[in-house]
Length: 392
Ligand SMILES: C[S@@+](CC[C@H](N)C(=O)[O-])C[C@H]1O[C@@H](n2cnc3c(N)ncnc32)[C@H](O)[C@@H]1O
Image 1 (cartoon, rainbow, N blue to C red):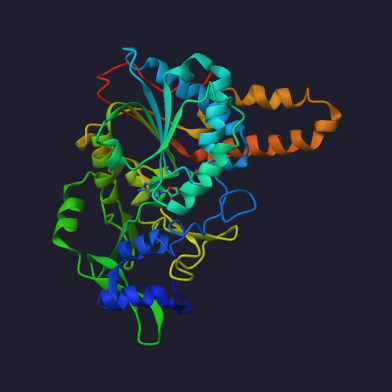
Image 2: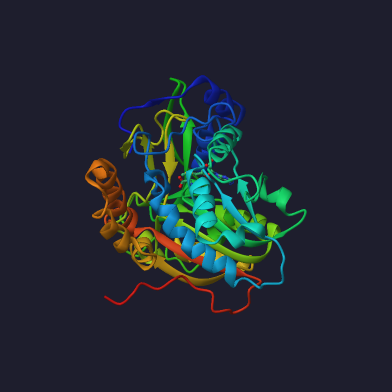
């Protein structure tokens, strides 16, 4: 996985020296992504969008937010209507495109909701918070209709927990994960070592007892029975802590996770022998995860069963799940495609660009395979669900 040794930058070498020269991969991922001065997200090096490091659904244009807004309005309106303020909480808003386009769409589709609504953005990176503030400042909503807008941490929200809808779009794939490797028939922890040459390389560490116990107690079968020597995958101990903070911040509502996700059986298959860890940068995928720490994204898929188990243990029940392609059709993507044909000839370039973006949102080999996972907390066994696609 690491054919040419990756040179460690000075800021990271200092952290490695302080930590004794070897750290678990999860610690490396934490530094590479979230170091406040040099991390990919922490320092704001990330560029999301078609011309950037990678494109996400909201970065392709406002169509995604306009479709999603219909689902969020249905969910917000289904929450117990005791007149309390409703919060739309987006965790990990990136460039702020989704939040800005959602506000605009909700303003147009359900103006009456704006009176009861507040938008809360939860962002770990202060550099990205500034970019989001600039992006939100450009919305075309007049001041009188603008809902309250605030940035805060989940810990700050916990001081006065809110009711509403939480959106986590491509958030969980950025949480630092542990990696495990099958070596001589036993799972070991994957580590990263700083060599005396100043290069980074992979290494193996003993699997900590709590991690071994968590894996044994889970519904996931890893390693799979027929896994080859060297088989490697991710373990998502990170979900529990994040959901615990979320539970303290939200006393009643739903959580919509939209992300790359796989069932445990497919995630921990013997054929997926290198896991799902990917490095992205400059529009390219499949880069060396140890190269350019802080200069590229590191991401791994969500394991659905692991997330369901962590969610249930923190009071979040799975209410529904669908693929993005199906959700886009249920929310009117086909009608949008059709309406592009009615645009006047002078808008042809715009129509072609939007057509391409809409098709990407449902591409079964790409964004169309994303999962929408809906969880509820404090909403009982209500009939809250995702909108179903029309019969074709
Ligand atoms: C892959 S980007 C996705 C951005 C955006 N949601 C989109 O889809 O375009 C991940 C985002 O989550 C943020 N993030 C990662 N971990 C976080 C955490 N624990 N709390 C809040 N934000 C976090 C990152 O800084 C970044 O804004």
